[in-house]
Amino acid sequence: MNANHLGDEADLLLRGGRIRTLDPGGSTTDALAVRAGRIVALGADALGLHATETVDLDGRTAIPGVNDAHLHAAWLGARWPHLFFSDTSPHEQPSGTLVRTAVERRAALRNAWRLLAELGITSYTEPGIGPGEDTGETGCFGTAMMDTYLELHRAGVQTARVTLLRLFGQLDGSADLAAFEQGIRAPKPETDPHWLAVTGVKIFADGIPPMTTAWVSEPYPDGTSGELLPQGAEGALHAYRRMISLAIEQGEQVAVHATGDRSIEEFLRVLEEQAGPVAAAPHYVVHADLATPAQIERMGTVGAGFAVQPLIAEHTRDWAGAQLGPARTAAAWPIGEMLASGALTTITSDAPIATPDWRIGLDASLALLGRDDASTREQLLRRVTIDPARQDGAATWKGSLELGKVADITVLDEDPAEPGRPFGGVGIARTIVDGRTVFEQD
Image (cartoon, rainbow, N blue to C red):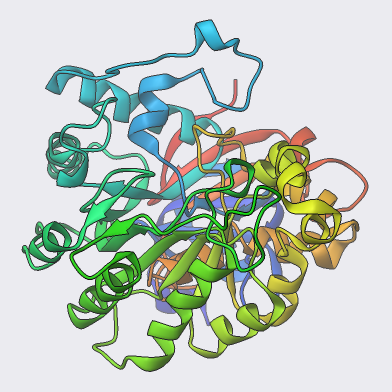
């Protein structure tokens, strides 16, 4: 494309470094031009434009803006810098109600957005906000927080794009089928989906293996098998399957917290059995600790996927191993099989459970995979950029640095795809959202 056909002006020009577009061919370039928040030229075409602002990369590497596809931003902002998996002692951990007023709710979100900008994160999924948590302990997940999101969104002050899932039950707890049905039929708020997309619903199916609350086929050492969390007059299994069906009937994206193989299996069966309106974004399982190889293949066949947390796996492996035994522990957290299958897979933090620093999460991924090479590193980078955009139903306009897509860019001091150095040692130099710098390293 000739630069003369693009007009003579650009708002922003990046040049003088390596730009990893993460397009389907994995191409790189040395320059990128932005106009009105969109990428309008690459390479020589970009260099041919006059730019209002020029950023000299000075040998640094730019990648698409990082997208954490499972991160509780309101909770993170209210708790920061305290994480559940951290050196913070139990008596220093925040507890009880964390936000009580509109001022505190706004401060929590703004605090999270500042932190995410410093980490090069330009998009994230807030996985569960709604009336099911109106009486929740923390104050971070109820209708009032949804209202705060809408207020800041309409004020145009976001520095990160948000995909939000509605919640009609308790976070990590039970949900009543009747209340779920009433909630799922309620209209969604009107938003600009490029900044606040309300794509679907979060359902909590079970607990976690270390607590023997994941619903599993093979019993734990104490003889129990975990249980389903949804509740209804016709039993937990009926309630769980009906919740999934109701969401599909409404054209909603369904994200299910499911760690046990039995809870994953029932989710898959509903997806395989039920035709419904095409959702705005693909359905997926969150965590999927004990997904089997067959389930992974079937998930790809139905066009669904996984949002996984390798860093949580690293923190909990020994704890879970006491309940699972050596064989099941060795097969747990099957990220290698997920990547090999081609099924949609996103690598996420679940912050504030673990750190929102995606670089640490990718190092944990390398450890799980047991290899470190350029191809693997590029695969992992795609799981925090283009695959999350696919999960958001937004891959046509974000997730890679291609012509016409939004200019969401993370600039790094070094090339993260080069093997031999931890991702965690690569510095973040600049974060750009919609063509505007929201963080710059001193």
